[in-house]
Length: 70
Image 1 (cartoon, rainbow, N blue to C red):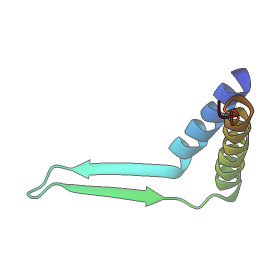
Image 2 (cartoon, one colour):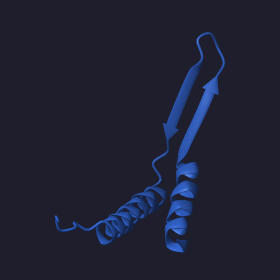
Image 3 (cartoon, one colour):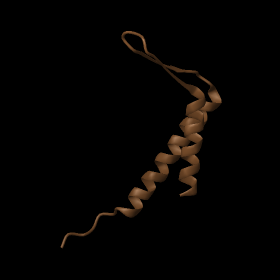
């Protein structure tokens, strides 16, 4: 659980530093999302998501095995 939490924290902190969301309350309201391409932040995000996917996939395969039919 600590490892999964650490991966989620790493993803969240790096996503916050890369993404910028701005909402202007004009008529009509405008939502703008910008992404700054910082290599090391994007590397940590992609690596964290890959490791998270591998760990969740492993836990799914390990815990939900096919049972023989009766």
